[in-house]
Structure formats: C-alpha cells, structure tokens
Image (cartoon, rainbow, N blue to C red; front, top):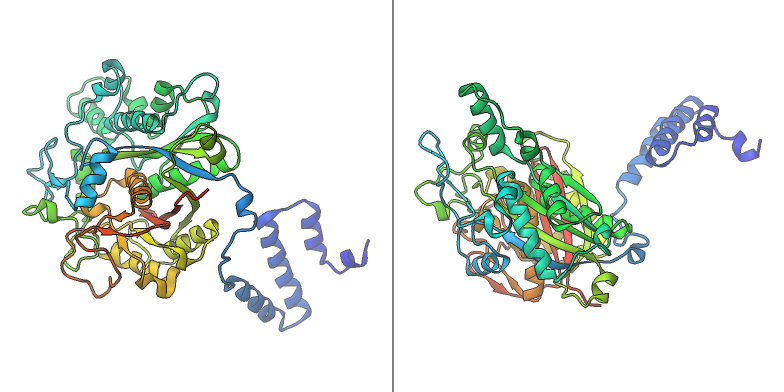
Length: 480
C-alpha cells in the first residue's frame, strides 16, 4: 500500500475500489471525509462545512472548458402555426406590428366557464399538409407538428432520402399531448356507453407527434419527446442541439406543439385560477409585466426548427438564421404550480446557459421572456434576470411573445425560439403589447407596445414551466 493510500480512510478507500465515479463518488468522498475529520478533530465538521460552502459560492465560469471543440449547431429552417397566422412569415409580421391573435373561443362552449377567450389557430385545414386518412388518425397537436415540419424542411431546402435519413432525427416537446382524444374517449365510454376508439391511445400519447413526423417524412434517426410542461419546446430545441453536438445526428427536426382548447383542458386551467378573465377585451387580456395583468391566456399552435451541424449546413450551402450557442435546464424543486419567489432555479438556468455559450452576461443584446402575464410569474422572471445579469439587467431589452399569441404551453418555447432567431436575423425586436401601467416589481425594459430596430448579436430565450421546470436557450448571429 502506498503512503498516499495509507492516509485514506478505510471506508473511503473501499468506495474508491468499487469504482464509484462522478457526483456519486464526490458525494461519498465528502460524506466520509466529514465523518473522518470530525472523529479525529472536534473542529473537523466546522472545517468541512466551510470548505463546502466556499465551493458552492464560487463564481459561475464564463466559458465551459472545451466549448469550441464541440460541434457547432445552426438553425436552417423554421415552420409555425400560431394564433397570428399559418406560417412563420405571417406570425413574425404580426409580432413586429404588435398585433394580438387572441379572441373568443369558437370550438368549445364556454357558457359555463369564467374565461371565454384564447388563442386559436384559425383557418387550419390538415388536408393541405397530409392526406385525409393520415389526418383523421391524428389529434390536432400532431397535425400541427406534421404541418409545421413540412414548412421547416421546405424552408431549409432539405431533401430527405435513403442516403441521409438515418442521420436526421426528431425531438418534439408537448405538455399534455392529445387531451382532446381523452375527453372524447371519456364521453363515449362513461356517458354514451360506447366502445372507445382503437386509435385512442395511439392518438393521445405525447410521443405520437414525433412518430408521425418521422413516418411521413422518412426521418430514421434519433427520436424523442420532451414533456416538461411549459418548458418543453425550449428544452426540445436545446436537447436537439446536444444530440447533434455529440455526433448522434447531423440534423434534428425540433420544436413544440400543443392544443389544449377543449372543455376538459379549459376546465382544468379554470380550476387552477391561472387564466385571465378579461373577456370584454380579448386582445388586451395578455399583458405581461403590466401592473393590471390578471392571468395568462391559453393558446394553441406549433413551432418547428431544423437544427443542423454547421459543417453539414455549409456543405450544402444552407441559409443560416442563427446559431445555438448555449442551453441549460434546471429545477426549482419548490412547488408543483407556484414559481419560487426567490427565483433560484430560473436564475441558475440563465447563468448556466450563459456559461454554456461561453459568453458573459454583458454580451446579451436581447431577452425573449417567458412573460406569461401571471401576477407571480412575471415578478419571478424579473428577479431571475436581475440575479443572473446584475446591473446589465437594466440595459438589455426584453419582450414577451405571449403578449400577442398567448401561452402555447409545450409549444411556446419553440415559437419563441423562432421569434428570437428572427430578431437576430432581421435586426428587429418585437414589442410587449398591452404594457400601459408599470409594475414597481417589474422595472426592466420590456420594449412596450412598439417594435424597436436594434442590432442583436446574442439573445436569450426563457421558458419556466409547471413543476419548476426551467429551460433557457442562447442564440447568436452566425459569424463564420
């Protein structure tokens, strides 16, 4: 036994010999070291506590070691269906113009509901994107995803064939999947006493949208689904970038999709008391960061992005909207529905995304906020931005896409990633509309009511979901 080994406590040496690694080994080492020192020295426990406290308060690194050695990931195509339009172009035009897509709900009977407004995708006909047989076996969230994927692949000018199909994957985020199918199945079985459709399970499970995309477009590579509530769309894009970075795919079709505009879905949100009841003014109901906000506006829609290994994109001379520079996901570990009033998880997610991008907080030129228009959520996000950015929080412009399209839940982050990429690509920051009365606790620059021309090189997009799910993306201008 070496002299160094002889100094190692027996139980720690035994743990090392078992091959424990990573955080598990570190945890064992810290625990056993604490026990050993406290036994040999009455002041040992205090010493270890001071050491560990010092480690926890180390500043966040400005650059992740080896960042530039990872494969670079760029956005080469986008597709969207939102309450503002059936294309990315229509949606972006509406956002820059400060136009609201919120109105009275038309597909459900809201007579007995205190909320009668929402964001619907109007004029959508699935037969324009797929054949009738395929469409009738899909719930609306899957139809949206298939349609938006077709737009994104066309926008990227990406042809899928047997030579590249295994290197093209799918990663989709959704909060609930086919809630409409569940509502219909319950009515048929429990009320009408009829047989449940054999397509019930395979139309409502959250991962089925990713299947339909892969099946209809022949994408044979990596395939997965993220279901982290309102953070799902952002996390799907971020995780897709990680898949490409580690070499498991050359291209990933990534994004989020949702349609919860059903009586069951609305009743659930009404019971939680999170929805705006500003029924007399639908277009003014979603008012993030405004003092008079009274809740979020539920919406539906989909955003899909084509993420691509930079070298692959350059070889085929693809147009590049933006580069995915950084990503992070954390947990509040606080409450199943309420945001942490101290904003610890959200602030940590912002800091980690900045570190992953290899930048400093002062490099951020714009933030696309989660900005849901809920009383607690907007205060929490404002605090998180302040904690993560310090003084720079007061100098960076911030806007909420949800002020115009409402909250697409699992689809929100993906549509907001598209808006963030276009902000960089077009040099225009869309406004936060309905911002009329400042909230003293929300005191940052929310780009009120009118779009702003600006050079945006690097931008942050935030998503914070039920269950304390936090996800952040850093996008940047592609500069070679």
